[in-house]
Length: 288
Image (cartoon, rainbow, N blue to C red; front, top):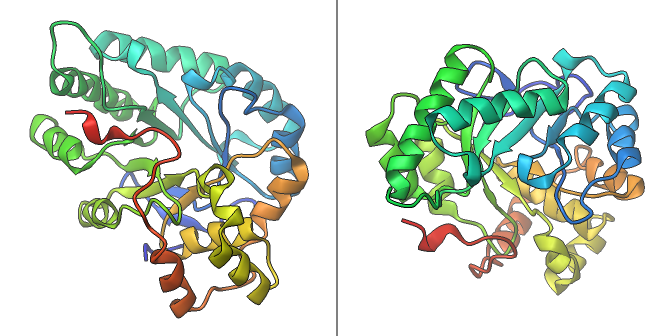
C-alpha cells in the first residue's frame, strides 16, 4: 500500500506526490451528463471535509465549480483541484492555452493537478505518440512555471507511460485510471509505484454494478457498512487515491465515512479476487 500521511485540511488523509505536494486519498468526482450538483459540492466541502475536487474540461462544469468553491468559504490553499486536458486541445501551444482557460473558468491562479485525459490524440497526420510527447512538453513547462503544482495523465497504460518516459523529461506525478473490484489492473498499479507515480482510481463503485454483487453485500453486512463504503474503503486500503462521484448530499456523506473502520486482510483478498477485467468506462487498451 502507498504511504498515507497525516490528515490534511478537512481531516482526510493524504498521500505524498513526487512534486512535493500531498493529495487527499478521497476526492469528489464530477462528470458530464448530469454529473454536477452545486448543493452536493457545497455539502462535500462544508459538511464532509472533502478538499479534493476532480473535474475536466470535457465535463463542462469548471465554471460551475468556481461558484461552489467561492460559496463554500474554503480557502484556496486548502483545496486540491484537478482538471483535465481534452484531446481536442492536445499539442504544445493548445495545451498551454487550454490550461489558462481552465484556470479562468475555475477562478483559480493555479491547478493542483492537470491531467492529459486520454491517450488517443486523434490528430490527422501525426501519431498518438508524437502528439502525447508534444503535449507533455507543454505540461512540463506549465509545471516548471508553477501554473500546475503537479502534472499527470489519465487512462494511460504501461505502453503509453513507457513511450512518455523515452520522449520526455518529467515522470507523470499521477495516473488516473478506472479502478473497482471488477477492474483491478495490478500490473499497472505496480508499474506506477515502481516509478513513483501516484495511482488514482475512478469509478470505485463500478457505476453501481459492484453495489449489487453478493460478495460486496455480504461484506457490507459483516462490517455493518454500506456496499459503497466497502468498495471505497477497499480501494483506499489498496493504496489507491479514490474519487467516487455523486450528486446527492447523503451519498457523499456516506462515501466519506470510510476512515473509522478497516477491512481485514483476508476480506481484502476476497474483493481483490473479484477482478474479471470488465470496464464500466473507457477501455484504453486498443490505443497505441
